[in-house]
Amino acid sequence: MLAMIACSWWPKTISAQDEKPAVAPVGRTYAITNVNIVQAPGRKIDQGVVVMKDGLITAVGKGIAIPPEAIVIKADSMYVYAGFIDGLSHTGIPKPKEERERDREKVKDPGNPPADRAGITPQTDVRNLINPTDKSVEELRGLGFTVSQVVPYGNFLPGSAAIVLLGGKSPDDMVLVSNSALYSELTGSQNVYPSTIMAVMAKFRELYKNASLNKSYQSLYATNRNAISRPESDRILEAFYPVIDQRIPVLFKSERVMETQRVFTLKNDLSFSLIIGDVKEGWPIIPKIKSSGAKVFLSLDLPDEVKKEEKKDDKKGAKKDSVKTEPKKETVKPKTALDLEKEALEKRKKESIALYASQSNEFSKAGLTFGFSAMSAKTKDIQANLRRMIKAGLSEDAALAGLTTSPAQLLGLSDRLGTIDVGKMANLVVSYKPYFDEKSKVRYVFVDGNIYKIDAKEVKKADDKVSAIGSWSYSTETPQGTATGKLVIKGDKGSYSGTITNSFTGKTVDLKNVELDGNKLSFTFPYDDNGQSLTIQVLVEIDGNSFEGTMSPGPDGSFPVKATKDPKF
Image (tube, rainbow, N blue to C red; front, side, top):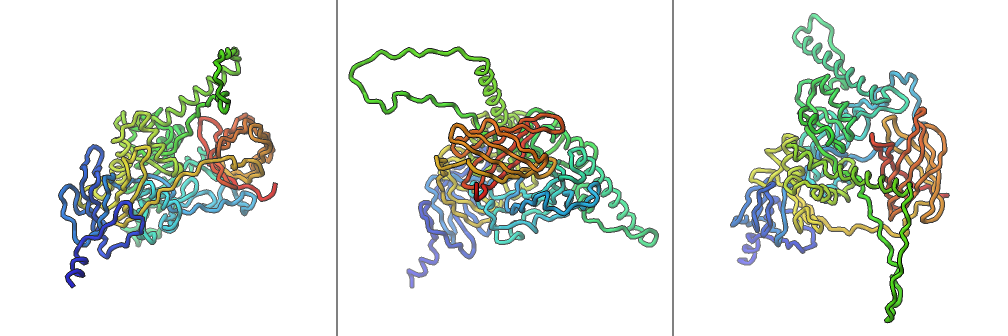
């Protein structure tokens, strides 16, 4: 009997090396012991204790009394941080099936299409779309992210944003703040109005001003219902009301400089609160961003680094000879104009990529508060990209702030998230080593006091079995809408060739510079845009019979592209 009583009062323990799944206690009480606590950037407690109960942090420090009902996690000198916050992504939203343009029902009046066909669905509530079991939730959580500002897929005005917890059994469990922003993109619809960026901006102004008029009329009607006609209900215009009242901001995806400039034009014309997210090229206009008062979430996506060509060792595999021979004198060929041009191009490319990696440091030096956006980043690259930013000059404290305290402040959540303090939500990430260490891996993540064990998986290396040869059906999202077509690649390793078609022109053109490096496929092809000759650059990663990546027409932007290999070729 005494033994049973002792067992019921003695704290349960989980060793950091224990691989058996924890059984959640009735009271959801946990104590992480012997852990290096990074409470916030610049605040650290070595070998301390963190206690959580019913979703809240109840004690932090050294010499903390552990509640008898707690499950104890012996961290053995691991590191614990406040859970990371993603400022903009589609996490938890299943990607809709792409509909080919030719399969769509034709619009009778393309100049005045149905609202959904024009991408105008601001009344869409993200809570109706979230799937708690979507793979993207688990993937982002596995990196230490516990909260994300989520938006629907779509163009122009896809719907409202919501701030969600990356854990829970239902959308209602997950949503922390509903209708946190009105989400918009400067992308139009194919073959209907608005299809161009200028048309999208004009339509946005029209909707905003009509919403202001409607709102004023509704207010007037509320004070004099017997004298004027009842106003009509319009969900699209009503979605703008919280923006007009300055209760929520407009959240624009704004990757490139030109996009950001145009978004600022709309902000200045209409005077709404603004968040710009997934910013990839913000450094050239940092002063303008700073003076605008806009809140900023920088993209966690970075262009691939230029790989150094390794010189082959001609002596590899050769038998050692005891007789010393004189080394052969190598004849250095003079560089041709083409060689010099290639070197200059590679140099410019490296310098350009370096600017992307150093962007966060430039924002930090300018005193701008910023968070990070995972929208266009591949989860497997996020930790490496953060290390690249740190290597480019961003301090580790500034990087941690961009993941924790800064997004909490920008989203109005500092009272609940961003630091490890008593009274804050029990959103934590525990890693074996300091998070930004190259060998660091996440071991546990707590979301609202619920524990998730992260199984470290080795990244699969590309091998010679990766094949680009075949016929691929691809689609890409452009400002003019969805383009589809066929990509055919032939040849052998080192001498590939092929063709590509697209639904916009219906033409077939030859591929150039086709290269396969591991699982990374790259090529270029010419494109005639109303008499203007462009060279489209494509970079994708092959995963079995599918690939994903980007198409870039030049410095003004890039578009996502994905494909699946046709069964027969």
